[in-house]
Length: 143
Image (cartoon, rainbow, N blue to C red; front, side, top):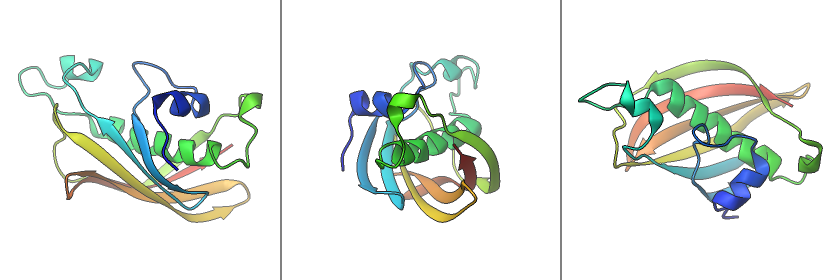
């Protein structure tokens, strides 16, 4: 299923400047998701990271990956989004930032479920610029 920004805002509580997903391209409910973020010079973090050589902070890329997974969980139909349910980030493993992400590129997030135990989801994914991996990580979250 494809989601635009209005749909994404129904599923996530995040808003500017912290909403970091622009569009969902593919979903397989509770299994996998592909989404994008258009990285522009107007992002507030570029003012200080770094003046004269703007680079998207790795933690912001990881946050965007976590938001992407949140969209998948909230859009699954398994969760009543009208009850203001929030997903809580619990941890990160095996995180690697492989290349700089600069203004003018499009980040593509590809995430998939690894396991779910006692209400804790473990999911893994990668962020790409074109066909090159920009970052990868395994993340954990719960409701």
